[in-house]
Length: 351
Length: 270
Ligand SMILES: Nc1ncnc2c1ncn2[C@@H]1O[C@H](COP(=O)(O)OP(=O)(O)O)[C@@H](O)[C@H]1O
Ligand SMILES: [Mg+2]
Image (cartoon, rainbow over all chains, first blue to last red; front, side, top):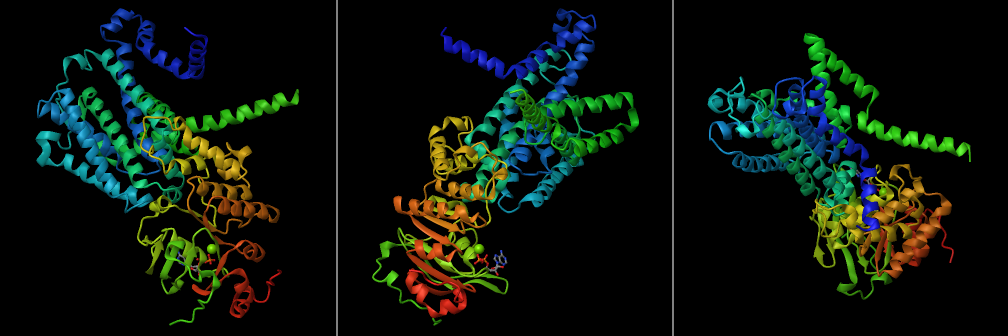
């Protein structure tokens, strides 16, 4: 091996030290948690019940939420389109997965194939209104579209397929990915999907296309004057976002015993918004950090406080927006910049 | 027919293929206000053509019509013999028409480099290569560096646009439209709000670009000394209408212009 390739490798590890550390931790986590509870890695490996299995479950939910929040960050945080109908992107994926498996007996690959088609269609549906409406009008129109979908899945006529207001249940998940018996495998599949999507998003944001999306967020009129037909870039962002959210919905249906119609409601769009506000809008990392904080806060409050949990979590979000307006990642980036500057000033005193 | 002096030497014997821009009875109304009123002008290829007139005369609105930012109420815009009146605004630069704004119009939260790089990338064929990093397209980065150097922002490449001093923002505004190397530059008060000592430098740069690159420049500018010394032709607008057009000396000698606009304040010092 040549000297340069070794040093580029070292540089790669040095640059991504933090990310690689987190990755290693996530890979080992099920086993570490097991050890703390006196379960050997072998027990964890065969999906024995216990604390590790529970934590894996919580982590899977966080991975799915993070995927969903990432997809919202792409259109809202990166491209600057505020959609109030984002939950529909997720919910269509979730319901379609359930219906394809339960009512039509489709295999997982076939289901995924239909999901891709549906995701593209719904991105086009949202995209259709783009040339006509901007800003808050876009938010309201997308809310309108999603509300129609919400009403449709709740309707009693579709009960045999969607389960109406009760929700869709009784989806038989193939054994090899069963969340009950093969949870560790499910954990690693969800983790892998999240990492791949995250890397794809990082690349997208730094690609010629993503840079234009950022330009659209910053000053759409100027972007058009530069010669970009901004419609196609927004459509690209919507399509990738829709595919991602549908994938999150797919995993959700496989993992959860029931798909609630709440996943189609405005509340679930607000969840995505809250996650980004907590983690940092337009940072991508913020979607991941935000999903962790959001889910753990929700879990912790419910467990230790119970009834009034949602009231307290509401207050926590308000405090977040007031005191950490750029979210955790956004604020950290500003701070680390300031810390660096402060450090340099300090060093300057001794020169 | 409305009285419109057309007897300028500037357009004498002009051939059709020497006209790069032409407007025919171009009119824009905002409600009851006629901001641009029946304007028909011809712009000679490779010339520096100034548009002057008091505030509110309709100069910016006229530029907006040329660049496709707004649709006219009536009339048409012909570019190189082709009617572009109803083309969408994102086509403008593809025809070779670059437009800068009186009120700085940049990407405030992006760096100087990225502002110009985006402009350089726009006309390439790589806009939808979302699986590749933007930094892999060296041709746009090279062009960006070239332009940054040209407008004198080399030391500021990594500065966020919004933190630039006003004069540098004006340079960036110019850099953004230079990057795609358009044939025609529509410059709306490029020196607006600049410190007086920075003005000659920018004007010299604009002249350089026009002469060296066989380009046509249409310039809105308030400084009469500048206008008189750099222009090949001048169109004077007043209340939306063309009050006069001609060479600098024709304009300076025009009685109507003297009373309506120059008000005797400007004296031609040649
Ligand atoms: N979008 C608009 N809506 C209504 N009135 C406008 C608009 N843009 C310009 N105007 C009016 O049109 C007239 C010409 O303005 P403008 O073209 O900016 O003049 P100039 O650039 O010569 O100073 C002014 O009276 C201005 O108030
Ligand atoms: Mg103006």
